[in-house]
Figure 1 (cartoon, rainbow, N blue to C red):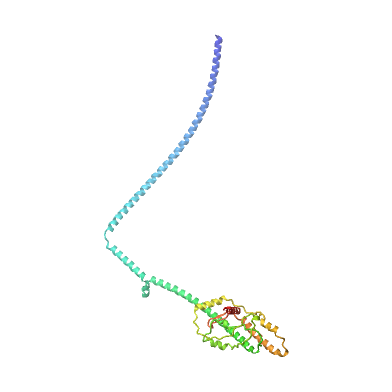
Figure 2: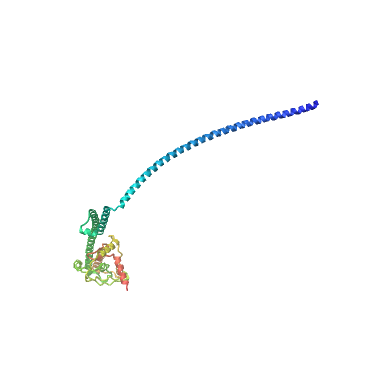
Length: 368
């Protein structure tokens, strides 16, 4: 029995120990739960305070918005009341104006008729501006406009006249300079022809040479009845000499003798033709004056090679022939160096370069 009690007691002690362990474990769990509960309550308290603060702020903002909306609503109501009052006043004025416009007014009709008459009169005056200008029926504004137009046209015409006068003065200066050049060339040509005419009596008949001057090529048109006797009195009498030219040795065709043409009636020149001739003259470059080496003519070489050595008795005649030949060549060379491309409208004398004249002669002879 005692052993049974002891065993029971031991079992009860074991149960007591287990229960105490359980109690301790539960107490610890309770403490942990209490701590967790305190933490959770603290967190919830913090959240609650934060939410309360946010709700308070939101409430204050909403209250402010409500106050602003109330103020705006009050202002809008005031503005609407003012607009409503002004619109009512406008409505009253419109009613008054409509009532007054419905009544027929003779004054308004008279004013409309007067304005229409003024418009018609102004249109008629605008259409008859030229007629009123000839009649002298212009107002001040139209007179000022016409005076400005006349002044502008006068200035334009004056400028054109000044330009034309300058052009005429320039052409007159050009004509005078060309006339002076032509006079110098005529005097030089007359001297050369005079020297050639004097030396023709001493030229040997066996001298094979041709003249390089042909006045017919430089005459653009025949002389007038007034200028012909003047030039005829100035130019000396030219004697034509029939000299046998050697075409094979010289290489140039024989020159034609000087021919005198009867002066026909001269057509009246126009300004367009004069302008065209002057523009042609400007396009042709003027040759420079200077010495030019002239090759010895083949005819002279041929005569020197073929002719036998002269005796002492034939020396004076040969010397005279050489002197006349040198004089003619010097005169022709002087004319060639002083011969520019000029055009004189009054004397109707046009001079070309010698090479161009020779080319024209060759082309004229090659034609059938």
